[in-house]
Image (cartoon, rainbow, N blue to C red; front, side):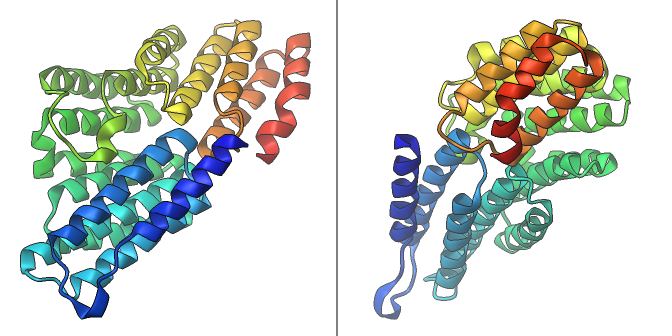
Amino acid sequence: MLRRTLFTATVGALAASVPGVAGGRAAGMSEVLRLRDGMAALIALDQSRGGHAALEKTALAGAAQAVRLQQNAVSQTVRQRLLSVAAHYTSTAAWSCIDARQLDRARTYLNEALRMAGMAQDPMAQLRVWNATALLAHQRHEYGEVVAASQAAQATTAARDPLFSSLTHARTAVGHASRGDGHPALRSLGHAETALARADLTAPRPSWICFYGPAELAALTAIVHQLLGKYAHAEAASHRALASLPEELRRNRSMTMVRLAAAQLHQGEVEQACATTGEAFGLMAGDPLPGRLRTMVGDFHRALFTIAPSARVAREWADRYRTEWSTA
């Protein structure tokens, strides 16, 4: 309850802090900087709580404010930077919808974010939109589009930074693996690992990429191996991810826990798998499960009763957690 109260207060304060320009004064860099600060706060909240309606609403308010301010910008440079900020806020709203499994709204927001990123001539905003588009396509089981969107992200000039290049290759690997294309998937993973090894992880970058690094690449590696049916490899990669994922990334850690449980389950470790999902619920205690995480738990539930339909531990797991994951 305390976490929810703190979150509500933080979002309310953030929404109130989105700047206006009194008396028709022209908007300058101070407005750009304040809006960017608000974006960083939203990113931090997303990483802890996951996507939900309040986050989406606040992100859209930030985008609307940036669009309104750019109409009275002091220069073309400021106008483009405000449009870039608007694209990033809209991408955050889309990301929130993807995480909450509101996929049609997410597609609408991403289309708008890409339009604004183009007007802003901002390759970083464009890369972010294509990255989110790849994730949305995966949620919609449109695996060819996963690969296409990831390759579009690779083609942006922002992907010259090895960290962003690594992310785009990792997304491409997930797309190939989803289609059962093992060799291209593993080749893309290799490109992702090579690029990440060249990246300066201490260099200043936009706040939205804070989730990505060796731990997240390990988590994406686990997804690739799981999709290819390599469950022992998926388990090992999940353990590597959990060893270094920051504690504050509760949603990411919880999702990795469920992937670990699925890998254990497919290797016949039923009791261990059920215990692992219990840890995932514990990480999110006090907050509803985001839609993506809830879907993953539902997939685990179905696999559990396919693999071990008569096991006592399976029935106990269902009795303990069914209400929590199905109605969260």
